[in-house]
Length: 406
Image (cartoon, rainbow, N blue to C red; front, side, top):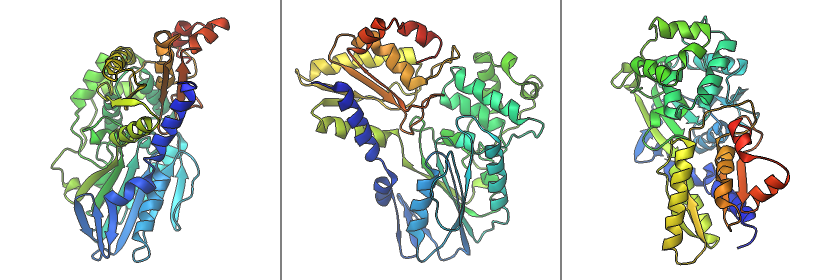
C-alpha cells in the first residue's frame, strides 16, 4: 500500500466522525413524552418545576445542544456551558470560556458561576451535569482560598509533566479543589441529579473523568500523600500547597453513601471503547486485517511502545500476508523532561521512528479532542521514510525526545 500516512489520517478522521454526539446520543438518550430514557434508566420529567443544565469539558457545547434539543418543545432548560473556546449554545444558556490544559482566571470565574447557578436548587429541580474530558482545568476553585491563581497554575503544570497517570493526577486535583471529587454534587440542594459523561479515562474509572465533580470519590488523602512521595513532588510544590501536604491538612472528599448522592445517578455516553470500535470499522473498510488492543492504557510510553510493537508483529503473523492494522486507545504517561513543544502522542510517534524505518509501516497517534500537550497539533503521523528524511536534515530524534520537543 502506498501513501500509508494519508490512509492513517483518513482512518483517524473517519473514526472521529463515527463517535460524533449526534450519532452516539440517540440510541443511548431519548425522550418519550414525559419520560427521559438514559441507557437502561428512565426519569419522569413532569414532576419538576425546572430543569437546569451544567455542561463543562471539551465537548460541553455539543452535549448541551443535544440534550436541550431533546427536551424541546415540551421542556425548556436553562444552563451554563463552560468550554475551552467560543461555541454555539442553546438559547437562554450562558457560555463561559476557560483555560485548558492549565486553569486560568476564566476557570475560577466559571466555578463561581456554576456555584451561583446551583444555588436555590431544590427537590423540585432536575439538574443535569454534562461532563467531558478537560473539565478538571476548565472548572476550578481551590479548596483553600489562600492558594493563588499562579500557584494553582504551577501546581497543574507540575502534575501534567511529572509522569503520573491521569488517575493519580486527578486524585491530587480532587483533594485540592472545592468543586471536584464529588464536592460539586454537594451544592445541589437536594435536587435530583443526573450526570452524563463522555469519558477520556481508562474503562471502569468513571470517578476520574474531569476529576469526578459529581460522583463519590473512592480515593483518600492517604493516596495523595503517597502519590506526592512516589513522584517526589513535595519539593516542587508551590508554597501554600506544600504546606497542606507537609502539615497533613488535606480534607477528605465525599465518599459513597454520602447524602450528597442520595438523588444522584450517572451514565457514560461515550468512552475510548466507542472510539476503538469506530477506528476498527474504518481500518477494516480501508482493507486492513485489524485488531484492537487497549491493554496498555495508562502505561508508561516506553513500555507501551514495546508492547504494541510486539502485538503488531503477532498480528502480521496471523493475517496471512494481508495489510495489517492495530488500533489502541487511551492515554500514556510521558514525563516532561525538557522545555520543548509537543505531547504524548507526538512523543509516541517519535519513539517509533527507528522501528518503522525503511518499512511499509505508518504510525499515527493523536488526541481525539484535537489537543496534544502544549502543541498546536492533535498528534503526529510518520512512515518508513520519516527517519531517513529527518537524518538528512541533521535532526536527531533521540535528542528531540529527550527535551520533550516532539
